[in-house]
Image (cartoon, rainbow, N blue to C red; front, side):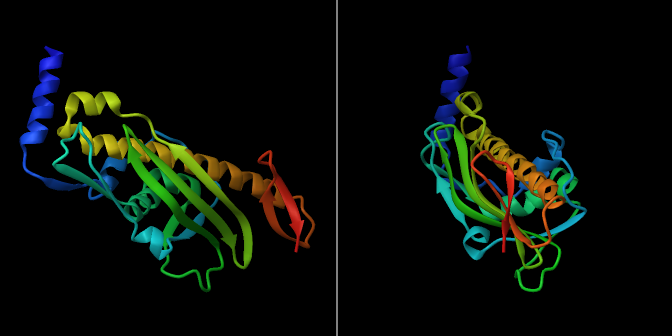
Length: 217
């Protein structure tokens, strides 16, 4: 019975005309529906973030046999990050968050997200991103992060085209959550080390073991 349902779902996916499905259009609502799935520690009372044009305008599209090869699934990663930073979970870590169009003149905590790559292959999303944290003219942290989201094989197998959007959203969110969890943890180490560093320490970086170390300017 289950096998028959699966075959019908796949067949329906193939029979429905070609269409491009935008995954990110209601991503904010998806985050609201899944609020609290991850808990970030508080590291700031307020912050601003900046997306370089390559990240803000990044667009990725793919096809999947499970979703019907006539269909394509598109993700604009800038929108994913905008919804993430506007969400309740991110605000738990960073407090009041605003997006800026330029890094010039920012005095408070500035977060810069540089997307290196985003792909959805097989049944999961993989994100590679460099995140930089600055406070005024001082660079606190800059590190590359990579994570692969939870596999959605079962959902895609049984749901076909009708489950694809949710599958991409869930795996993408999980990958981004992993990266932000690592980043927030690293930033907390930076702040902890900064409290005990001499005044001439111009920058804090992470050593090979992930521990903060002061580097004189």
